[in-house]
Length: 199
Image 1 (tube, one colour):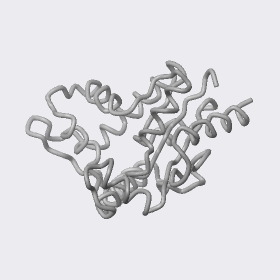
Image 2: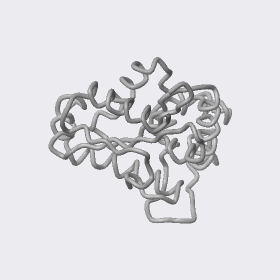
Image 3: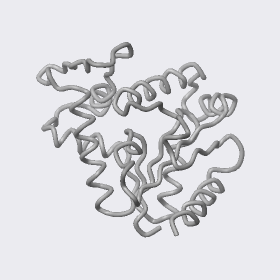
Image 4: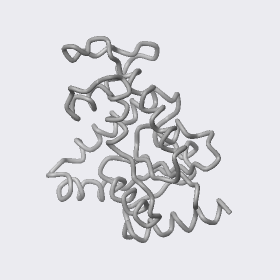
């Protein structure tokens, strides 16, 4: 496990962020999440946008086009595009992975690092019932419909930039369902599995 970089992709509302946090803690490695977007923005020379504005810039992908990436305008940032953010984030992800073992959450990191021998990718999902319950308790009353809308955004972004289907088991080393069992137990099972196949 000394050199393994774990990437975690997840359905919204399934506990993927918490699972990634637990994995990083158990392995005593860094977890990279929203830091990636800020590092990418700095790489592009963007330093005056809020995190929400950066996320909007990052996720602006037209759902019905295959060849055109829209340019997004934030005042002085006219002409900066989602594609630019994706490329910058990919560079940041590769650098972080080269720095040592870590857990990277989201941002199509599984695709960016797919050719790295020390990389292990996970997709985290859960039943609608489990996600709906967590939506009410953990996500400030979000409905299943709202959770699924976020999933649609994630899928559109991933499919657009990778040419692959978000959530397709063939794209990941392991798919885990968090609907039953504690996240702590699931994290232990993932670590044992990785140790077994990375011998």
